[in-house]
Image (cartoon, rainbow, N blue to C red; front, side, top):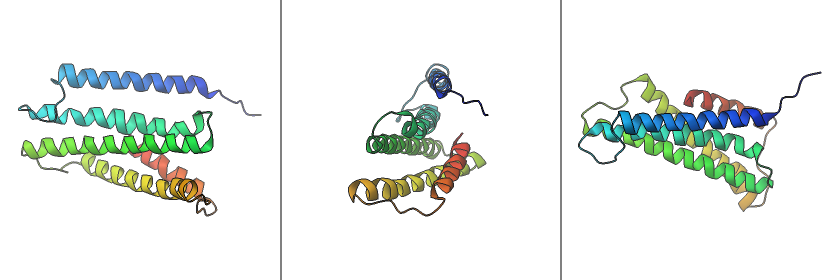
Length: 172
């Protein structure tokens, strides 16, 4: 018989580590790299927005969106809306973070998409956006707005979980 582990200590641990990571990136960006700015003479201040938004938005809020559907003791439709909105905010902050990197590169005469990191990042944010649109249409629009069942095929949940696990690994 397998031992059943309680999720609560792991959830607290994950939230604590996320908070510590966010604080450390903010301290690093603000104190050691001079701050955050969308418009500045020092173009590094523009780039500093990128790691802050990618961590807080894309990693932390995206992770919160992933666990929110199973962790909140609410009605299914309410959990779906929370899940959808958190993923949308994560996607928007991720896109703004990428725009900050492009803005910094354009104003500093640095070529865009010159590293493997940048190409993987563009691929991941694109796939994340496609996944969000797919999830919105199939799981929210069809079920909530049209009051019909989502279009499922056998094993759909398996493939979606596999896809999202791969995206999560690529984000981190």
